[in-house]
Image 1 (spheres, rainbow, N blue to C red):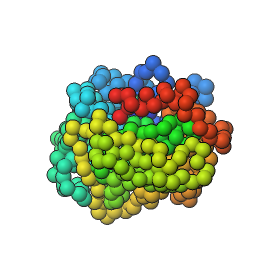
Image 2 (image 1 turned 90 degrees about the vertical axis):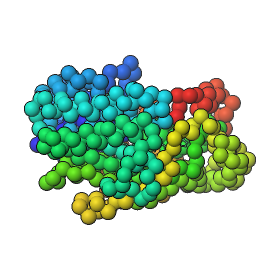
Image 3 (image 1 turned 135 degrees about the vertical axis):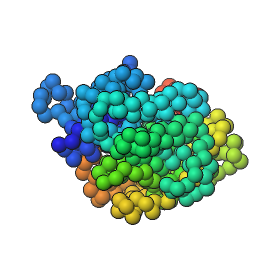
Image 4 (image 1 turned 60 degrees about the vertical axis):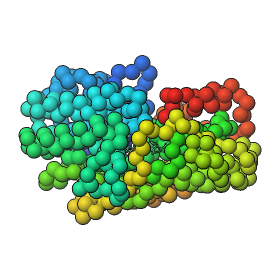
Length: 415
Ligand code: NAP
Ligand code: GDD
């Protein structure tokens, strides 16, 4: 059976890819960063302590960091993986404007360190580089493998460097290296400061009476949002081909941030209207389903635009042209935007101990994602949500917790 090494195993994609590879019978090794708090929440449910169940563990974790080339070489040499999935990165676009040098060090140079570790170790794994649609930047949609890149952020520039390094090691050393140019993909495990999860989590907090308003930036940017579990399957599929190549993966659809907010609220029966312009815009409750009228009322300001969440340079529209993956890999996305919204809202309600409408969870089950082992807790908060469901939501806006959360929402560190 094959052995895979994953950088970024603790992230959204790393966790789904781990489950997928374990389900295929792989032995999986992952690099985790040392942290003063637990950072393995997304993979704890599939981890078995090798000491406790000797001989049965298929998932092994190693401390490491993309800034540490010696350790990367040692890990590659000792593990001798058949496949390396390089997902580790400083992956937040807005944060990359605050930390451009760090982003370059980890997202760009981290890739070179890993590629050099492979070259110097003499091991010849197949290599997946987590490239990004953000590299297309200002290029008009739809974007495909031949679209000229026009990066608009330090993150995108760093990813572009990493993209070309993967191409160069393929050409110069014959490495089986593939760039997956993935458009935005989301899930209930998405980091809480990315747009989709920030919205669905805030909605769940509002419905449980813990939060009054979500603060956002540019409502008019458009993204091609897909479902993360489908996209990690594509990472694997690229490495199973006869020849290495680069592929765009997306849904082919594009929706605005504004639509995402409206559709998330509408799914639970809350209709919004917008007032004001650009930096001063507000999302206001127009009507509320009776189930939630004890926590939200018409006229409540649930979305407030804040200038600090705008980016110095924005990517206005991303929309994938997926002709190549359709033709070469015979792939078609099955979870499209509207189901994605439902899935994410359902789980965030569940995590908050609220009974979800359930249409999103039903879609997941119908599509047979049997290799996903949903953790029995909130993947980011540690709550045993299944045990708590359902509880009655109450209006508790005056509590200290609510005030604290409102402050955190306004904090510079929440992007
Ligand atoms: P994510 O949730 O932010 O995960 C990033 C991972 O990288 C985490 O495991 C993180 O570890 C790790 N990491 C960060 N800095 C590191 C360092 N110095 N050394 C080692 N590991 C480090 O990202 P994701 O959404 O799963 O995305 C996976 C990859 O695909 C990223 O490279 C991202 O840029 C790229 N990508 C994502 C999308 C998308 O829409 N999700 C689209 C295109 C490309 P901690 O858990 O310790 O922070
Ligand atoms: N994060 C965030 N927070 N984004 C906001 C907010 C907010 O409060 N308000 C509006 N937005 C807009 C952003 O300006 C952007 O246009 C859009 O929502 C999506 O932002 P993110 O969810 O942060 O994702 P991203 O598109 O910048 O980057 C993600 O996708 C890339 C692929 O295109 C990340 O996952 C990258 O790692 C990935 O490469």
